[in-house]
Image (cartoon, rainbow, N blue to C red; front, side):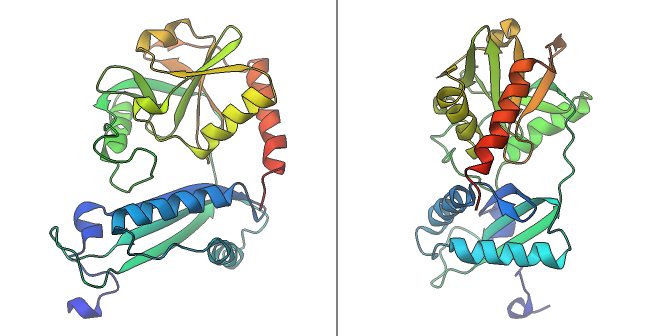
Length: 274
């Protein structure tokens, strides 16, 4: 096939180097939660990858296109997982094309997320330092997360915790990490090279301002988890998912505190819909 006939030419930076970014979130019965924050982060990623040469996507257009796609797949009354993928289509190598091209792909599928507590291993793979790439963007080139997840699967576990290059707790391969110890909550800070998720920020808001619980953000060694009362992870699709085991150490699940947090999240979401 001739290059100019291909929908996605073979020699593009998107395919060669993963020059893209994405957002993944839930739409429940055609209602969005904090869509603007997802679109804002997508636009920041696009600007980073293109050097500001790509126009930002419009909130109304993304919402309209996504709803049309949901309708065409007869998912209007379902819990739907949406992924928006931006990819840059520069020529191969490190040269810049005079006219920067790109494509945006939206996919939808019925969300089938398990609520079963997760078993976790600590991966040998570390998070990439923020000095090497912006940690607050969902860039396509996330091979360290993929490799950590593969390590977990090879050990018969559901997910993996990644540490920083300085041996501090960072995040799991699919989300942010929280734990409760006595009456306080702990979570790795942005100084731990984490991707600070939109759901993470929402939970901190709920815990601090609606449940009057102290949330500590900092750099914590792996041993901190050994004294935790409960552990969970969070992302925009799984929301709050309990962790029952980390490298053989068991944690209590089904605790009243987490049930209360999940109920408060339902209330919180109803106030941030679009």
